[in-house]
Amino acid sequence: MQAWLNKLSCPLPDSLRTPVETARFELEHALPGIPVQLTVAPDRGDAWELAESPDGWVLNGGETGLLYGAYRMIMDVLSGETLRPCATAPRYALRMINCWDNMDGSVERGYAGRSLFFEGGRFAYQPERMQELGRLLASAGINVLCINNVNVHEPAQRLTEDFLPALSALASLFRAFGVHLMISVDFSSPLRHEVSTADPLDPAVQRWWTETADRVYAEIPDLAGFLVKADSENRPGPFTYGRTHAEGANMLARALKPHGGVLVWRAFVYNCHQDWWDEKTDRPKAAYETYMPLDGQFEENVILQVKHGPFDFQVREPVSPLLLGLRRTRVSMELQLAQEYTGQQIDVYAMPPMWQEIFDEVPADRLDAVAAVSNLGRDANYTGHPLAALNLYAFGLLGWDPEQQPEAVIRRWIRLTYGFAPAQEDALCALLLGSRRTYEKYTAPLGLGWMITPHTHYGPNPDGYEYDAWGTYHRANRDAVGIDRTESGTGYLSQYPEDFREKYKNPETCPDLMLLFYHRLPYSFRMRDGRTLIQRIYDDHFEGCDEAERMAETLKTLPFPEPDRQVILDRADRQVHNARSWRDVINTFFFRFSGVPDVRGRILRP
Ligand code: GCW
Image (cartoon, rainbow, N blue to C red; front, top):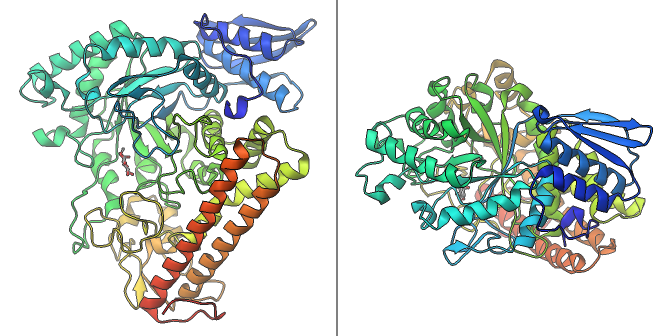
């Protein structure tokens, strides 16, 4: 089972070594009746062009360009579209998947089974599955795969001797698909190798990293680079030595530079030991405060990877002010396919509509790269929920061209994956397009986020993080809820450009769905449609839950093939259960605090 390419059932031979060989093989087997001449223009990289010739088609492009072009032709034909001459190049040079896989085989925030790459402290993978994965990634235009968790644990932390040959063998499987591997490294690694410090300005540390990079690149010359989570959620980093993140990142970047590698440095830095009495510290402000002063100080092979929102992949967050602020730093925007806070691949949650909002806010020339936390695992269908494969596919397509419309991407995926009749395609497309809004309605209201069960992050718990150290407070009491993040409050909003501030600063004009992100408001606050805030909260939760029930009914009517059908229907039942529990817990929470009954007399627990 290969998600959207399940119609391409031809197994891939082991002999494939280069993207051009793969392109040729795939075209010959998938489109045997269509003559395609491949012409390589090495300097064109990922770009490609398709033209008609008297004897068929001419596909011209860089080595990887030919592969992307070949998959595009195949997918056009498989999804019933007519081949047309065209030329295209990706908007972002790096389109990266970040796996949070540990070498013991577990996956941090993984909802699709155990790791595809590791088990028992070592590399353990099925070569055929790696080829299938290479095919899936390349067909979606994804070109970098970071295989291990940013929270680096042993033995990856050590970069042991046997790590590199195994990594090299894996890299050669993906090479045929134009996918470059990347590894997460631990900033304190030198300490495990008889260097007494990890201070980035210490010559012994610099030497250790230079030698390590040399060793790694001797085995894997086309490794994309290193990914680093430093000084974040208790990980080691430059702060221990009184150094800045530019000093830390640049030291590593210089070690990679002779090899053409990039150093991807995550900007997910905040105080995770906050005192909940402290109302001055506001977690969403943290990344901007840390990195804006460093803008322009990074080496040119450093890419700063910024989560799309200022918190952490909640259902609704504003775009990170850091993404709008940085001008002289190469930036990657990090999305999360793993549905950590968005239903854990049990609840249906199609991400393209959410990403469209994000891409609309970030000027196109601001980003060099996009990255997404993986939703992959060892489950037969790769993504746990068969419909979650859409998110992987869509990430690749939007990383190539962020202007593609969510509906077009979703329809194309449905055609490739299921080939439904038009009415069924319409039904599934509408369901997917609406799935994020539905999920949003039955979970934490109006931009508040975070009312989840601590640690597992599935299911409701309004006070789960309220008296904790993670900086994610709603501060609900009997009169009001939310945090004032305008200038009169924490000042978060002043990290944005003027037009953005104008849009959100006033509760009367702030878009409803962001209301409680920016403002602290009484339950009696009048929304623009005349409802009170508390009534809006109740209504959303009743509506969201009704919608989840209807989604489950619709899914039952659709002719999914087995084994997808069984998985989809089982998970739809669990989603309904989850939605009811959210509705009841959240509504009860607010009813108990406010004492305000539902105007429509629906039942709320006293
Ligand atoms: O959302 C948090 C997750 C952690 C994760 C962290 C991060 C890899 O709960 O599991 O750690 O984000 O992005 O680094």
